[in-house]
Amino acid sequence: MQLPLMTAVRQHFPGAALSDPLQTLREAWAGAALQLPPGARIAVAAGSRGIANVAALTRGVVDLLVQAGARPFVLPAMGSHGGATAEGQIGVLAGYGITPQSMGVPVESTMEVVQVGELADGTPVLINKLALEADGIVLINRVKPHTSFRGPFESGLMKMLTIGLGSHKGATLAHSQGAQGLARLIPAWGEVILKKAPVLLGVALVEDAYEHTALLEVLRPEQFTSREPQLLVQARENMPRLLVRNLDLLIVEEMGKDISGTGMDTNVLGRMMLPGIKEPEEPGVARIVVLGLSERTHGNANGMGMADIITRRLFDAVDFKATYANVFTTTFLNRAYVPVIMDTDRQAIEAALEVQRLANPAQARVARIRNTLELGNIQLSEALYREFQTHPQLEQVGAFQPMAFSEDGRLI
Image (cartoon, rainbow, N blue to C red; front, top):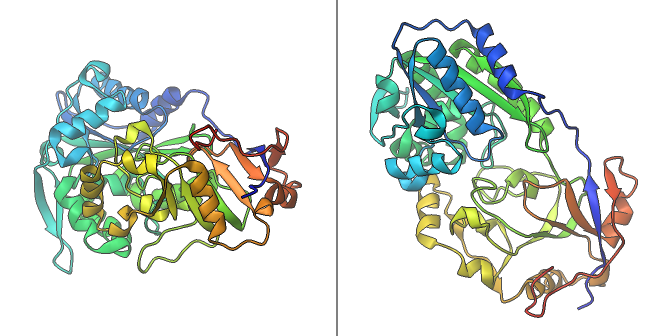
């Protein structure tokens, strides 16, 4: 098959990185005017993946608490991640650079939860036992669009407060009600927990399109419900995305849990594939080919079901025990379905174009990305670039060239 010529393209997004996130933290913290009794034991909840400056900011919070005379400890707040074990979650934090040595305080973890109330429909509200028993809780999390549902509260402080600190039992219970249930449960649970648990502050982070900390606010509990939805709007506007539309094929070089909770960000793909959730209208992709798994996902291939075709090397790297443990918690089993498997990268790409019965595959509208996080530098086929070459945020930075493959059919 004659494949289209490709060119390197730079997508330009507005950048708004804070010059000194730690100084911004200190100033915002002072503005919150937190008063603590001497020796107060404070749980610093952390644990979301891929947050810029997460270790430095967590240490910054710890230091501020110590300066205030408190006895802080770091508490993983990540639902069922880390194999749904206390030891596994400590290991996940260590992978983010958050350890007792780097923080200067203990890292404590448990999967034990306590019921602190119930919703009108009888749904129990659960929270991590260590968090509830602490004298205070400080949350640190990034506010961003979720990959499975839409609502005023998606990924952020309220989700960490409810599903993150709900540990394995809470996360499983929340996901059992489906994607639409998450949008309902997070604020409902949050209201109960804010009344029952000693929540002191939340450090809300918003990133720009280049994964830099762009905004940092320290919120008091009474500000969570009013301010977080506003931050979510800002986060959505900041998100990196494909600036081209109506693709015949999207080639994704790698996917993994270190990139997105679903392996690939659904907001970038334009695919949700969940019952009752409306599919995004943009960018519009007919077929998706995924070539490999990232090393840091450790075999977890949650999200591969959103692809149409994968390669043999991706399939051979899958740890199905880890993948299935993940999707059983979420209940979104279709996201772990195995797509069509082709032996090589070239065969996968050709199959994705062949199945569309295109009159001239050389004129196919193709985009190639490393993953759904790194969208600053991409490749576009000639036909696709020609249509969007006048876009003010697109810059061609290379000549048109044929796709190159190694002797074993791997895309170079």
